[in-house]
Structures are given as structure tokens and as C-alpha cells.
Image (cartoon, rainbow, N blue to C red; front, side, top):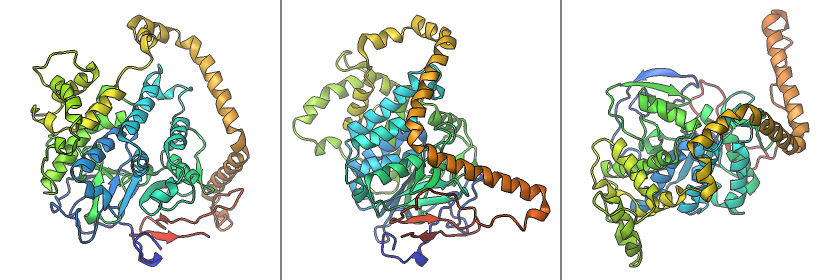
Length: 484
């Protein structure tokens, strides 16, 4: 049974490539990119139906996960019932990471600090994420084990669907039930694994190899009419930035509909290569403002005064911050990072109005300002001097080989326990490639080609949860399969 009490045969998963009034909103889109005109607008409150219920889907977005933090913060403050009563949360890659951290009860400040720490670590190296000493997967795995509670599998089972891409056939699989915390971490690592950027050997979940779920289904949902979709990219989503461009062309890739504009080109690049930390803070606040606009346009909530939910002591603490945010305040009241963050908003948001400051959440702004404070003290400031940075780039041909050798040794040591499984999987991949080559080169050998292409596993995978996977590209739904 799937969450909601339906039988396996009744389960369908509609994942359209675009949000519109087309003839078939439940048909999944092909994985390859294609071009289309702007879809027709939907009804205003179609996705929010108190009678039928609703779900929320967060797209994969790499380092732009700050946007999801801002959206969730806004919904939690202004329309908490949307999060509390949602029947299902869905996510791929960074969207799945955000949903799990939110459902685990992780504080807002901690979520922002973790994202800032990972982004700062990527930007601290001369060649960024391509530096051999930067291991994104290890950082994410360590943070998940450190901060997720031991009963996280009980908190999220049946409440979240994590999108994965199966390596053997490239099909999309969605996991919704877990037996332990380790399984939750494994599923998240599979959903966030970007081939070649994250490594060469894809991780496994219950004995099966998977990679980034965004490669096959970047914004999953069951029913297009009752799912609130969230994405930091310009496109046809319920909560997303609104482009001022008159270009009506869209590109559909991995069921993600992207508007063809320069802003999206910039965001796609920054999803893989993190920008300046203040820009990431700006993206977080943009997510908050986009969520406010969504609530207002759909009549779910107006603009209540946020201070009415605060204690009597908190306004006195927050007053200096808001005074510093105004243009006529005296400098030096708070850290300059918060002011620079708002300067980014003033410069980049069209038709800026100072009343927007009253819309932003004080709690979110304080959390961002604290996380953006420089780390490392005087040594960090000394290393950021222009002559020192120039010298580090000049010495890169000498230091990079040594750092690469150290990083290779560290990765080999951590790889030792997984060498048998990985070698067996590589042998299976090699045999499949040779079989396909021989099938195409020798037509007479087609009848002798192996029927089964199931990837091997040293131990029998234990499936006690629910997974959805499409059987073929022409299949309009997905089948529920459970392995005992």
C-alpha cells in the first residue's frame, strides 16, 4: 500500500513536463531536452484544494537550495497549514535534502549555517569544486549523520518521496519508506550524486546503483492540479521568480520547464558553481518574497504583521536591525553583512520599494546575517588580501600536485571497504557495454544477447519500503513494486 491507502494497481504518478492546460497533464515527458511555447495559465487555486488535499514538490537546484529555505520560512510564518497538512512532500537532489532537514525539525539557523559552510568551503579553493581536496559528498554525508535525529526514518517515512535515477536503465525511481537512518542518508546521497562532479562510482541504495534524481525527474509530483511546485529557476512553477522578459520560449529537460532567458543561464551555472555568499543570501530572501507573492495571488494569506507572533522582548532586540536596514539609519549598529545583503536586493529586484523590508522575515534576515559573518578571524582576512590571493594562484602549479596526491590517498583509504562491490559493478558495466557493441556489430548475435540486464549485487537488496519506477517511456503512470 502507498501512503493514502490505495492499492498498488491504483497508483499513478503524473509528472508532466510543464504546468499548463494541455490535453494530458499526467503524461511524463521524455528525458531529453525539447523546445516549446509558453503553456496556458492554470486556474488560480487549482493546486491548493482543501477537499482533495495537496502536495509540495521542491526541485533539484544544487547550491541554490537557499531559495527553498526562504520559501519554507515564509510558508511556516504566514501559512503554516500548507506545510502542516500537506499529504506528501516530494524532492530531487537539493530539494530532497531541504525537505528531509525541514521534516526532521532542524532549526532554521542550523540549516542556513550548513548551506553557508558548504558554499564557503567550495569557494575557498582556487579552482572551486574542481579542486581534488573538495569532497562535496563527504561533507553532505557527515552533516546528515551529525545533525539528523536517530529516528529520522520514522519521521519522514510515508511523508516524502525522494527522486532517484537508476544507473542500469536511466529510469526514475521514487522512494518513500525507510527502515533506518542509514537508508535515509543513502537515498539522499544517491539523489544528490552528479556523475563526474561528485565522483566516478555512483552510490547504492539497497544494493542498486543510483545517481542524481534530477537527471530523470527534477520536479516530481503525483497530480499536477494538486501539487505546489517550488523552483529557483524562471519557469512555469507555482513558486518561482517571475521574469520580465517577453520571450515565450521554454526548454523542457528532465521534466523541468525552464524559460529561455539570461537569468536562467546564470542560475543554472550558479547551481553548480556557488556565487558570492551575499548573492546566496539574496536568493534566500527572493524565495521568501516569491512565496509571499504566491500566497497573495491565490488568496491564501494576506500580509500580516510578523511582529504579532513574536514575544514582547524580541521586538526590542530586532529593532536595531530594522533601523539599520533603513536608508536613513546610522551606520555601525549591526554587522555590515546584513546591510550588504539588502543592498543586493535593492540593486537586483525590479521596482524596489522600501516597504519590502516590512515584508521580509526578521528571523530569516538575522539567521542569514549571522551565517554570513566572516570566519577565521585575522588569518582569514590576511589570506583574502589581493596580493596573497595572487600569490596562491602563482604557486598553484607547485601546490596542486601535492594536494592532489594527498586527496587521492585519502579517497583510496575511504574506498577500501567498497572496493569488492565497486569492482563487481564495473565488471557488470563492462560486460553490458561489450554485449551492446557485439549486438550492433554482429547482427547474427542478437538472438544470443543476454536477456537480463539487471545489475549485480553481492548481497540481496532488502526492500521494505515503497519505490515507484516507470516501466517504459510510453507508460503514462508508474508501477509500485515491493520486494520482501
